Length: 119
Image (cartoon, rainbow, N blue to C red; front, side, top):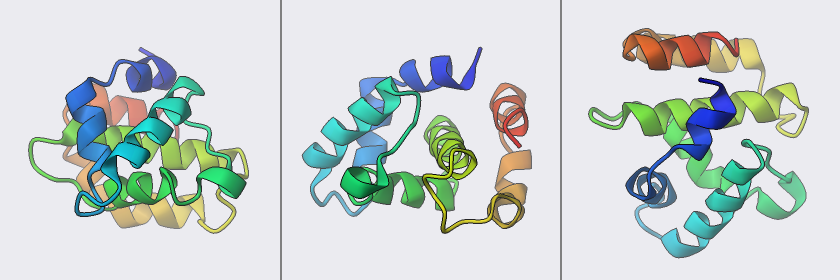
């Protein structure tokens, strides 16, 4: 499975989880923007989508919550894609990965393989 296939395969519940990561604030707006980003394979337009939905994507990539490994993986993949494409010019990929390596290595093997394939 490719990262894009993985993102597009996220369930509505998984997308809702990500969209609600800012304490549920503006979750409907985050959800709609997240759907568009996922359809583009994770590409975020920082001029128009930095807050909706990149803010919740960043939150999702910041901390692995038990039972939400797929959502964490999706957020990591989207941030990595945006770092690699130059859209997220604020983050350093190596530092980003180093900060999350303990969580990444704890992922189930298929999810860990998806992330490791993008590093």
